[in-house]
Length: 80
Image (tube, rainbow, N blue to C red; front, top):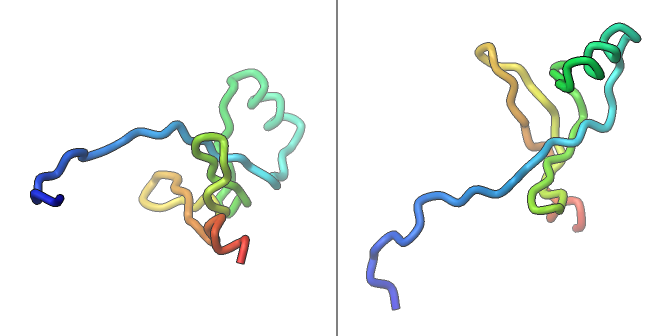
């Protein structure tokens, strides 16, 4: 039965981006270890994981001063 009312606006699912390939200098690696943060280079190959499952593969791209995940393939596309 659809009464036309919206029940839910947003849900939050813990996600993380897993970097598969990245070239670093020894000093850059030391900075990551020291700060605990990584700012992947534009074009880094990654997977987007949500709820413990890989849902997409893509790259990190920089646009308008920020970093974004650009989907190249969803997990469903990879299975077919």
